[in-house]
Length: 335
Image (tube, rainbow, N blue to C red):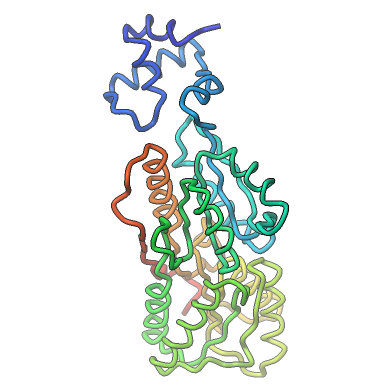
């Protein structure tokens, strides 16, 4: 079996340099690291992370927790996991988990601590205020954690969130430019704070702009294609005259809504406009291409992983709160 000493000899470097080359945040020179990694690949050298974890007291594993797998869009989940994974150091594993499977009350706490104990650090992609108890529990364990997606009040927890109000305001300003006077909406889960805040901002911005929200054209979906389809069917059934645009809580529901419109012979965008939220990877490939509010997954993932790695290296990040603006992406589903 090839050892690190074999790699050191072949690369003409020290044994310690080989070890440092496999540490993502070490201060080794870039050309030296590349040379060592090239030699290691040529020799089929695989670092013994079990032994290294004993020495460094690390598991080389990071946990990623969502509020709920069931209440999370498959596309949102997949996109975010992919972005986190791309930022993951090559010698780390990523474990994806669901907060709603964790009971932090009563006798199961020891089981939770055993599960959490497998991770060197945790990123929590929170969507609901119900997650706060879990977040506070992990914080009290003194585990390195970063909470992303939703803004939280705790000033001692590192938090990367999106300013969704900016994108919603840009969208309403664009609707004014297009001469839109009436709006309906397919909201997300009322239990998700992000869904409530998006709706509140939509109402506020529309009222200020003189755009009427048609109450008979308001439905709640489950962030899925099917729920968007079903909600749009209800809106069509309940309204003899449809609003000019339907604003959806995510891209999946918007795509489901477009399918319902097609079946009911409403042309998008000529007779009815549809707007999504998230700007998922396939939004631009729809027909018509989906106008949507871009949520900066990549930037949130990069910043969250950057902060977590700093915490693992016992470096102090510059600040606790990072808020990244959303923005409107204009495509073809609004006329």
